[in-house]
Length: 219
Image (tube, rainbow, N blue to C red; front, side, top):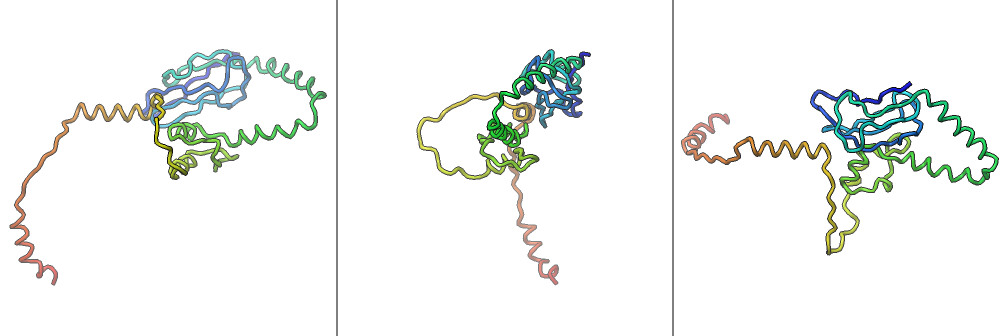
């Protein structure tokens, strides 16, 4: 059976979001509740899980597209689960006798790398702050790097100042949050009058009155 993967309900103040990057390709098997893609809104980054186990047969919305709530993102064939798992099981059974016992040890390295994976919000903040996620020790579950870990690393002073010289320049698209802030600032500048007002006030009578009754108030 073919089922649709849709954009989850957004908050009342958020009308749309931007697709970041698909974590699965067409033809790959997916498990139930496995994260398929992240959606960046004006406030948060949402993770879209797979509603059922199956095979991803179609990607309707591509990376970088703007989507709204309940929009179809992809389609999954739940009946293709068994067909996708059977060849994988047969291949694993055929390769098992040829595998050397010593090859089991390096398999721990990818697991460790997976445990230290960064959360989507942390990875986004690290990219904007220039922090190397791989160099951080995550404080989250299974060693995952959290947003707070990136903020703490970004707050630390640099070990050594970069030598003076040519500055590399790189243009990157703004995130939805930065774009929304820029939009609000520009709208405020265009719609509101920006001015400074000065008023002169003679405070001498008030100061004289204060000096006259100061001692009485203190008593």
